[in-house]
Amino acid sequence: MDFFSLGGVIYDLLQTVIAFWNDKVSLVFELLGQSPVDFKAGEPWKVIENMEPIFVGVGSSLVVLFFVIGFCAESVDVKEEMRFEVILRMLMRIGIAEWLVSNNVTIMKAFFTSAGALVKLLTNDASTELVIPEEQAEVIKNLGFGESLLMMILAVIIALVIIVCGFMLIYTVYFRFLKLMIIVPLGALALSTVSGNRGVTHTAVTYFRFFLSVVLEAVTMAVAIIVCNAFLNAGLPTFTSDYADWTKALMYMCELTFSVAFTMGSVKGAQTLTSKALGL
Image (cartoon, rainbow, N blue to C red; front, side):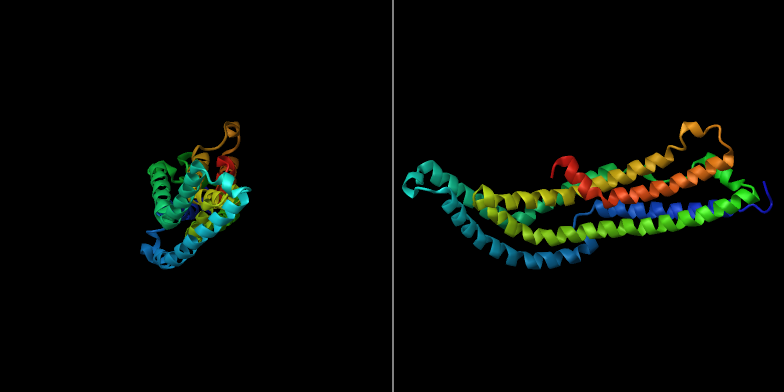
């Protein structure tokens, strides 16, 4: 071991930023398992609950309006259309629409709880934490002075990337909560279109698809983080077995940077990925 080696300093720096990353990942998992109802002790949700009666009142009025629009669009001859089965279908449609408008928050809470429970099941495994393999740790600690100078520069870059990505993870999760809370009151307006014809009902379908993509985004985020951490924890590819130790350490540190960066990219694109995968 070189007396002037910076290997120990590099290893300590990497351990510090990886601990920071694991801490932020644990926080993200905890937040993704939460319902918006419980986020920040429920204070933001109270604001939504105070707004909800206004939107429900407007939505209930729109139910009648969209029903009339749908009826006029579908009816050519009123006498011909006024059969028992047609009247029954219309009454069922307006009844379902009114029920959805009145109970839209209750329905959404059930989806919040289900998605949160699925995230908790996925994240209970402690092996999702990022760790430096023992083999690479020894190589980094025993780097020579020349190699350690190069590695020190790379370690500083890695530290900055991990810190930025860690805070971006938190930002992405907070932004998801914001999106959910904003679209919840709009559900009463969107679901009121169920009382109309197929052309009008498309609004409710579009809204619900978007709502599902945002809710299930939490599951995609959790899976992305777990899989990306597993990539790095699996070690270097087998073709590197004949490389010099310091080269392996260099490749490991580069892979660490890329892994954290594409974890962040996967989390940022979780909603788009969910929408495409499920056809939402």
